Amino acid sequence: DAGVTQSPTHLIKTRGQQVTLRCSPKSGHDTVSWYQQALGQGPQFIFQYYEEEERQRGNFPDRFSGHQFPNYSSELNVNALLLGDSALYLCASSTSGQGFEKLFFGSGTQLSVL
Amino acid sequence: GENVEQHPSTLSVQEGDSAVIKCTYSDSASNYFPWYKQELGKGPQLIIDIRSNVGEKKDQRIAVTLNKTAKHFSLHITETQPEDSAVYFCAASMSNYQLIWGAGTKLIIKP
Image (cartoon, rainbow over all chains, first blue to last red; front, side, top):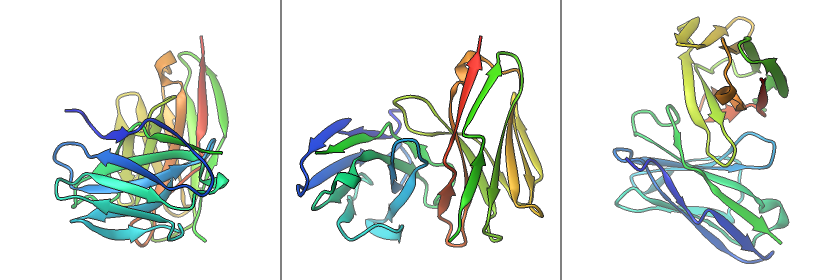
């Protein structure tokens, strides 16, 4: 079992650019959540996808959008990057019955915005 | 807004001693309280969780206690080992089932 896989592991972008991050959930999981983790802080919830739809959303602007594919994998898109978007972006998977419980996290994508 | 406060931010203990990390939550509707361990370069890993209808839960050297009246819960690690060194996060569910996370505790195990 490969667990949750995220790509790329590191990314450097320039302010104003757009970025796409990818996530494959753990085998048997159908729900994907995305989190932003700034240095020295706890993860902040961005949104959760289930059945290819955004089920819940945290307090993030519309510049953050996502998608879930029929195979349950997911993408996180961020438009018009700001310096403050620099962070570790974590993907977590779970089963539909558990929602936010027993989350399995990937190792994250470290995004640096210059 | 709702929040979770976690203390201490850094905890240094001698190998073999016990470590205790405490969290306080504000949402009275919270009913699920997980603890995650994050090692350098990795994502958080669930180590133990508890529901509001249970006061204590143990798993080998790890235990979590919950005081609903005081709205606080704690992580206890006994017989600490070098591999316990990591950042530990508490979290609490909100009324919309989302998790709100503490700021983390860096646990250092001294040899």
